[in-house]
Image (cartoon, rainbow, N blue to C red; front, top):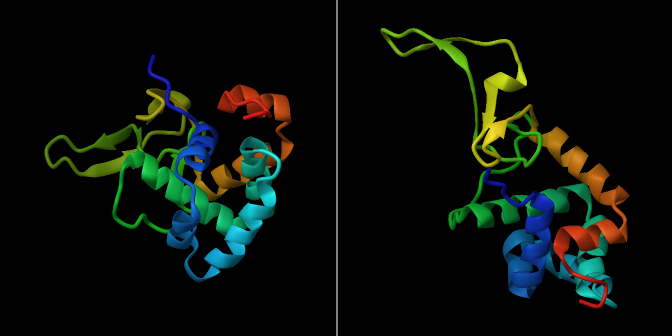
Length: 166
């Protein structure tokens, strides 16, 4: 079964491989100078724990800008990504918007009639390639924030494959 990287893995990959002052300006615009200062204060003594400290130091709005930018970069979109929409449903596991659910459709007109009662067996995530539950984008962000604030350093090392020395 195909297993995609989680948004956390993608965050560390992005911070290691792509993050720079120019990216900061692209994402944060007029706020870039203050965000870049937060980054510079966060990276000592090492990048891995610095990336974690940086994320925690950002306010919620700036976290969303960064994560949405990373998600768009992973999808390979050069165009500007849509703004955060709390009512948008995403995969509860990976946050992907590439989801589907079963529905009743009129076979003569192919018009949507109604959805089927919510059951994980009736919902699908293309990224995870399995049946999943959906949640709102806002709820996914809240869950991600809660997880991020609770993670310990050994777990970070397992997720990123980096040690404190790297």
